[in-house]
Image 1 (tube, rainbow, N blue to C red):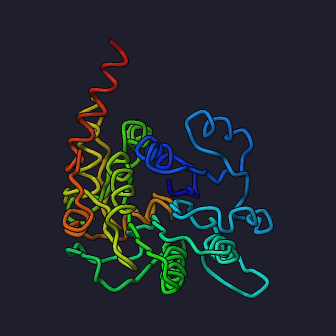
Image 2: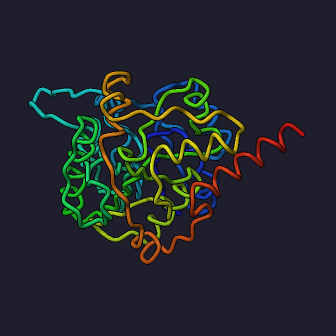
Length: 302
């Protein structure tokens, strides 16, 4: 049985774990000792280490045949002694893996669709040139480049570019209750989505079918504008629709972080995940996932 190491043990990692059990001997890199019990009780062997402390990563050298890299870059640029900018966590991870007697056979990395930048609402496939517009997207591009270079050493590297992830417990309900405005229709942008369960399924599919140095838009079939998505959630959960602003008004009232998501518009195509990874979406449209979330809530209350 092959050994698989999960790096980045958040929500998606917890969703893929049941899909992997019985197929791999699973290790989970955790930095919080209090999390070890969860992974051990659920069939994985925790490895206590921290991507921000490269000296702690020595134990993963040569540990696993397969790496599932779900860890985000640091929140802000950091510079190592060597002067490296970008995703220093991925740099330290790959350096640790390179010290093993053998390299892993395969790496699946979860990146972001933000690497494309603003595409003015155009249809976007994986051949689109990368034009990241934010610092966090630039760090993701750096991580992708590092992994591609590592892949040229004989490691199969598959990269999933995920957009906005949602699930029953990852809906913008607080934003709706707070009445945070959205853009009016004439100024609105296309947003892209993927249900967390479908993203977990795509990650596992990439382990089986992902091609070497290949990228995949890990997105559903929706082509929906951001404010329309908020309206869908509001209507399903009997919440007031948020007010709409012009772009100029939004620039005056919203935070830079909120605005950053309203400055990029694209419609991602998912032909590769369907044709190459052989994925059949459980929630092909955001309305499917929202309806399932509402049903789940009603079942809990009944």
